[in-house]
Image 1: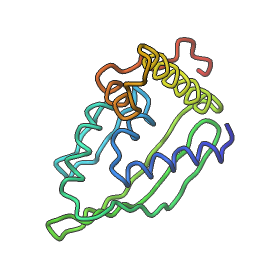
Image 2: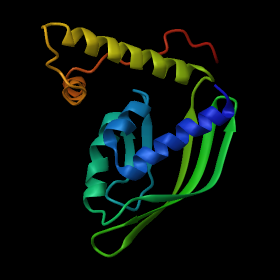
Image 3: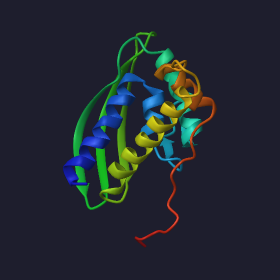
Length: 164
């Protein structure tokens, strides 16, 4: 995966944040992802992936409009992308939630895209075979997504670290 591809993937993640699309955010985060929110709000603290995704809807429930980002720097080098940005979210109270962000995304070049393709093919295969259980399809993609929420596929994990 090229540096430009890594940047594009990170910007795709920011687009899901701006929309408040928790499901897509979860798909783009690794199982061991952590998120730290600086002290100053009720959302402050260190969160593991599931805990962070659980608080995101609460932030957007109070919003009066979309979250927008102004990107100051997006730097890709080797296997990481570093982003500094300013975010603005108009709130129903009339105030604007403004925050400075610094994100660091880490991965191994080439593996993220390959892993995403593999997971996508596994999901398609499972969907196909679940629909073959009868003579007509009974499971549409939306119901399949709900099923994955209740019965998620195992997450990919690194079993042999090649970079130390």
